Image 1: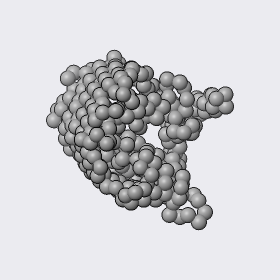
Image 2: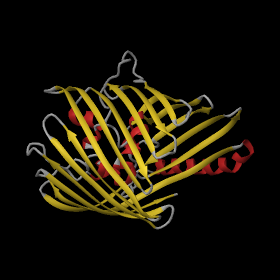
Image 3: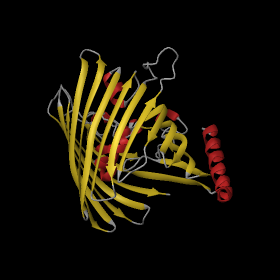
Image 4: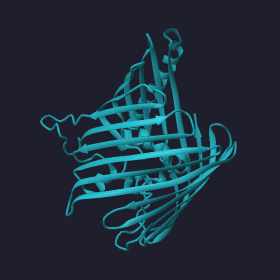
Length: 363
């Protein structure tokens, strides 16, 4: 832990010192972060109700460094280093990685953006703003086991290219190396990724995105690990339309997990529809319905939240999340599985309810 604190201090000092000298090179380094904490009531945790402090729910806790250097001719060198942690106990997230949320360096120009490192694929890039996760619900609005990666799962050793935006339209491609000799197709703990995306967002009322991601090799995602699969393929579409203060949104994903013990292949489809509304400049909320179709059971999720902005950076919120399973053999408890630091476990029934109040601030 002392080494971690020392590293954080050195990184912060580097950011501050670079920011002081950056003006001479027409460059910048920004230190930023998000802190979220609150109290959650869970109706059934392994047969009993529970009240817990849960953190990083509206948004995951993080601090990061975002930088750029003007190289001339419209070209910039860019980087992002983003650390994830648990606010309740101060422990590092993402398996203890110092910059587990993102570690990226690249170039940006009129020809597009090329980045290398640990970064997100196009499932989150192109679809997340069409989900309750990003719009108001946070982690508890995640689809079952994050089967479609929309809660945000990183790709190691990756190269990613995104075209310039032309009249709102952009496209991208990513390749994630396994980095294991003799295992180009991916292996245990070192999967190989390919991902593609197409996005339209012209800052108007309508936006739509498409995405595809394929991973060979175990350890590629939460769902793959939970089901014991050896490969996973995700593809989806998401869209939204703004009517003044009201925005309606939705998404559909089709997800195939291969090499599942006992069944071989599992195909999971998820559909989500919702809306959010700004009641006033400082008050907004939303509600969404999600349907997760697994071969052995189907799950209905409802996510709702109301946020009140104390300032541009700080808000308080209350949320209600409910999950119902249509099979007693597959109990509820699915929206909490993606937060292992405070995983409350499955319900012993087909239903589970979570009520939460929280505080989020940004810097």
